[in-house]
Length: 305
Image (cartoon, rainbow, N blue to C red; front, side, top):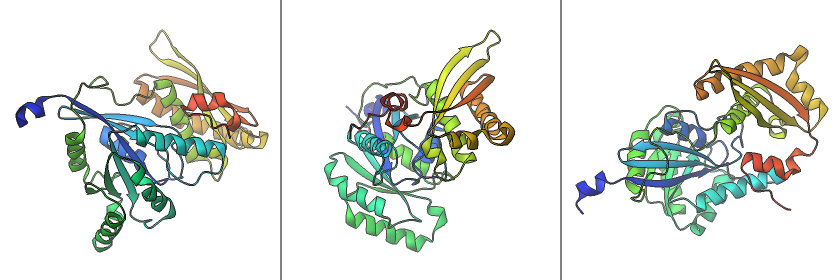
């Protein structure tokens, strides 16, 4: 088979993006896909389960697996997130370690590098946010990281600004194995629209609220009904652990929940490509983070201990 024949064959593969919390994995997935498939927040540990973004490069279909940030877990939910992230890495064809160059060296990234030898796939190093530090420091960071672990190649990018993404996308396309595409050519994510809607509302909670409250809450889409005029009627429940948290989300005279709903409705409408009528309810469920049903809803395996 000639090089031309190989280039004309379809290819498809899973590429796991791993890294410390807030390294920029979700931003990178969204930028490569060209659409919002994973929520983004300045707060750490926003991504809770595996999110797969799908992009096409030539005849290659790249299934980009956005994993939860890897850190030392303390609570049950955190343990589930970290287990999910390592599981996604273990199942991928290619592994990309994303490093926020402003924070290196950091304990989370060093702990990840120590575990890389356990993963047998080809590994690539992606240095993100390169526009925010001096080039001399960047080259030193690259040398340091490559001395600590074996990486096939190193890429320097700005996921937010798009610098270096075209080179990265083409290289990843050359790495995935030949084989049929797993998804339709125009699909951008395997995330069901109902779950994406829940994630969008959860993102708005992160943007609106502070401290620990967003981590103590979860969002579920209870109803999605298409109306005769083509619009969608959506009901969602925000679960919190205490009545005081419920009051914070509602805000004075309901202004908090109205602002969250308005922001979420705009983005859900864009994702669904139709007008949306969004109804949010806030309920107290004291131990929702110990409820196996909530983990299934989030696509996580429930840790027994």
